[in-house]
Amino acid sequence: MTRKILISFDLDFTLIDNQEGILNSFKYVFKEFNIAEKINDDFKKTIGLPLEIVFKNISNIDPKELINSFRKYYAKKGIYQVVLFPEVANILNSLKKHNIILGIVTSKKQELAKKLLENLQIIEYFDFIIGESLKIKSKTDLNLKNFFFQEYPNYTYFIIGDHTSDRKLAEMLNCKFIGVLTGTHTKEELLKDSSVPVFILDTISQLSFKKLFSFMKGNE
Image 1 (cartoon, rainbow, N blue to C red):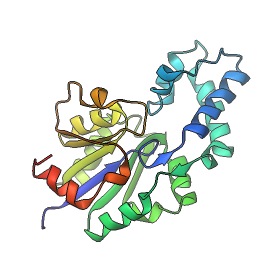
Image 2: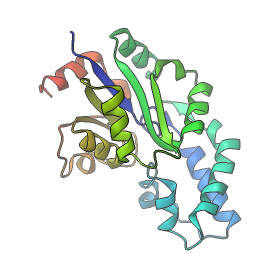
Image 3: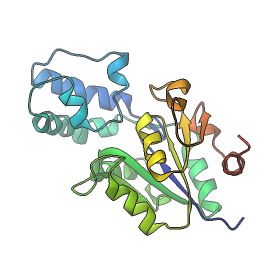
Image 4: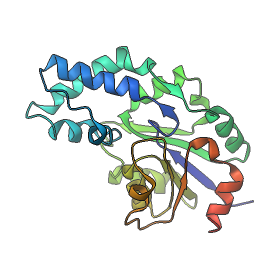
């Protein structure tokens, strides 16, 4: 196979189960700023969105203050309250053997994402790691689009994630999206009104080069 392939993964609820660390970080913020706790199923669906959007929807307090509090707890404790989903390391290793470019695009601060991947001992599999930074603020940031097109022209892109924001990244790049159901979004939500082809997996452990190739050829 000579076609050049790039796979961009989301992080939370795609490669890792980090719900404990994320929710504990929110609880820390709610307690510190005396905000009524709002953690329910609807709130959990906001995990994966930029923190500024989440906090603007639940409080009139300056979101920068809330974000700083969240990240203070997360950097100290939440980052360690995380586990890889089964078979992640084996899948990444297998894909690299096929000379596929692998990357991460996450709503996390970029430096935190790198630290987390180092702690989990999988950072060496990734050719790029992109999180929130001074230059890129969201998964639909035009600077992110420019990064893909300038750094990896003439590649076939696949975006893999659990959230509709990941699908929006795929739509921005006009590429195929692989949704996983290990987050808070349903199959129907990930498929609804999509302008790009979508393939759904129950978990990332079902991903294989064979399935990727089949999806690329339009057989799924």
